[in-house]
Image (cartoon, rainbow, N blue to C red; front, top):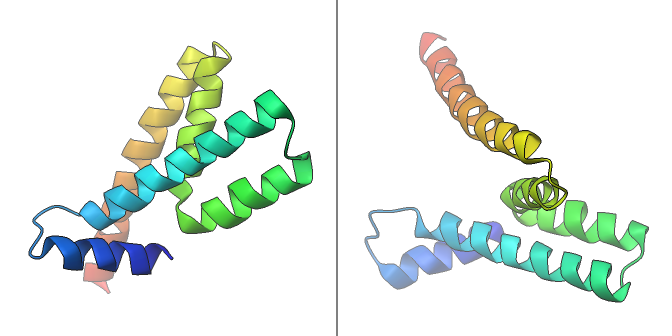
Amino acid sequence: MRYAIGGWVHGFLQNAWFPYGTLVVNVAGCFLIGFLAGLAEQRSLLGPELRVFLFIGILGGFTTFSSFAYETFSLARDAENFAAAVNIFAQLVLGLLGVWFGNALARLI
């Protein structure tokens, strides 16, 4: 689904200079995980097993960014502001460093 939606967005926008497809997928995943979490928490509609399946299995397969966003939101909501900030920093910086080091290693091989 991620590939199909991303491709559709890029085809719709034609010659996009920005990765709009990824942005759309990530924002949609974040919206869906927020919506479902709200239903689960406010109305007790989703049991713990179904919540894990939907959040990690389905939406995590769609975009892991939605899991990251929800976990950061949960930390901030629970007044764990330092942990939320560390999570944002670590995910972003370490993720970019991982891409950079992986790319550098590939160039050496």
